[in-house]
Length: 84
Image 1 (cartoon, one colour):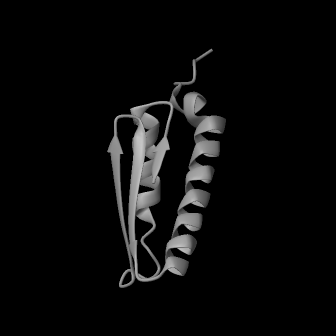
Image 2 (cartoon, helix red, strand yellow; image 1 turned 90 degrees about the vertical axis):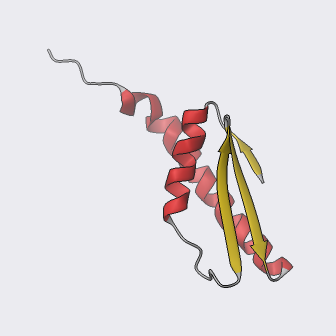
């Protein structure tokens, strides 16, 4: 799965956030996340098609949450508050 982001920095943030959560069944689901320029690349290996569907759905829900969070706080979170 390839998920494009606005920048390489945002793709790396998504990778770091999603990488923290390990798979619930690591013996049957293997996940590899990498970043290629501004694209988050996810590779999954599962034992069944059903597990592939469930795993990819959960992954995309996490990506959606990261994208919405970056959209809401991304630029503002990087700004240093100005002193008055």
